[in-house]
Amino acid sequence: MRRISLKLKLTLLYTFFMALLTCAALAILFSLSSREVLTSVQSKLERRVQESAEEVSWRNGEVRVDSDFYSVTRDVYLSLYNEDMYFMYGRLPHGFSTQPEFSDGELRTIRDGNLEWYVYDMSVRLSSGDVYYIRGVTSVTNAEESFSVTIRFAMFILPLMVAATAVIGYRFTRRTLLPVRQITETVQEIRADADLSRRIALPEGRGKQRDEIYVLADTFDGMLSELEDVFEREKRFTSDVSHELRTPVSVILAQCGALMEEESLEPEVREQIGLIERKARGMAEMISQLLFLSRADQGRQPLQRERVNISELTEMTAEEQQMLAESDGRGVRIVCKIQENIFADVDETLYIRLLVNLISNAVRYSHENGEVKVGLRKEEDVAAGYVMDYGTGISADALPHIWERFYRADQSRSERQHSGLGLSMVKWIAEAHGGSVSVRSREGAGSMFLFRIPLEAADETENEEKSEKN
Ligand code: ADP
Image 1: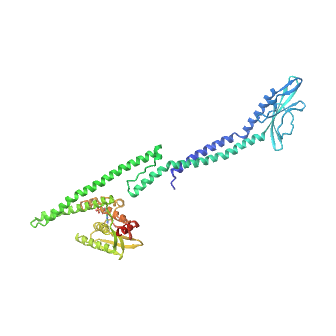
Image 2: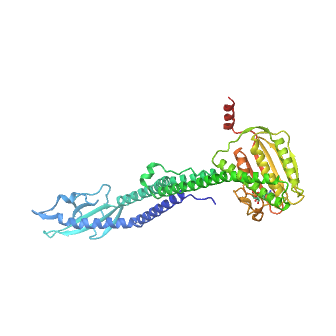
Image 3: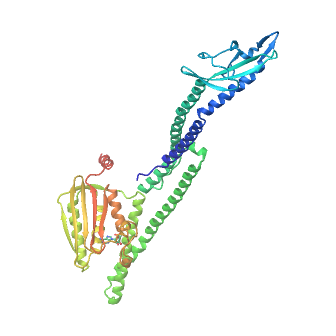
């Protein structure tokens, strides 16, 4: 299922609650049904008529009404009649033309064409002893209409408010979560390029607010600075140690060489010196690999790319490795399947190093009398090569780690002169040429290392070369 973003989740939450509120508001409005509204209209009518009794009086031998009697308060029209239904004072609403019989104290609904009216009559006995009738009339249609206008207005405005909440909520959440995206992108870039010098560095404006996300980004940046320091110190340490060890190891090797030339040496002593020499040579190799990688880390390992016939170079390296393989007496054979005359822009020394590391591993991890295949062919604009063996293979657990420095799948072999740096170099060399390296392996069945190197250097390198020539 597609992952729902936090942005969308929060927006849905706002909108859901707003919709809930809207439904509740509409439900309340509807529950105040038209009958309830009309009941309040009826009671207003009754009250108005009852109050108006005070505005009618007997003065100077005739019936009189106050000026208030004529005013239309709360939509109620008042009129005064004598006992014979003779209209004396007051006002009647426009459209009210029927003249129903009096019914004292009873509220009635009178329909007149399209219009509906509430009529309430009340008798008053004046000081003269005569009985008069006050009639109050109010429109039912008006009351219903004002109610339905309110409902219609609510039906329009409330969904609009839900939509506005969704839009504003989404924009607000997006703005708030923007720095989170920045943090994620920076961390992803750091992982992809292994470049610890990058920082999230949220813009200054946000800093003033110093909200939780800003503090998180700041903490990340602090942690990255510390990590970068640690890595820098580690690289410098490796580089310094390798430099320091180089001289004593060379001295040991030179002294061993000089001693071995001594003819009077006891065979036992000669053997012991031979062992020291082999170990020292292993150390010298490891130091040179360490120096190579630390130079590469610091960007101080330049590529001297030139157009080379890599078919010949591969063939030649494989032959040299064949001679070495013969000398260890395990009978491993190297078989080549190389397409002729492939030319590529490569650093010759580094290309040989890549091949040597792969082929020597293949020979080392082959069974006795095993076969190692070395292949190379042109595929569009890349040279695709492989080194394959039918030896021990690599377990699925170990496979993702073999490119790591000092990683050795089989620790029991550590007494041999293996540093666990060879494949790190292979990977660096392939990638520095703009290529890649990968592996397929099955434990017990063997391994196949594939590398791809572009035939032509990327533009920038070409330009550099051109400018150098000029
Ligand atoms: P090492 O000097 O130990 O060979 P590498 O970096 O060259 O270091 O290789 C790392 C590990 O990968 C080795 O220790 C070994 O376990 C495994 N490996 C490399 N190449 C092969 C191969 N052809 N067959 C089996 N295992 C291999």
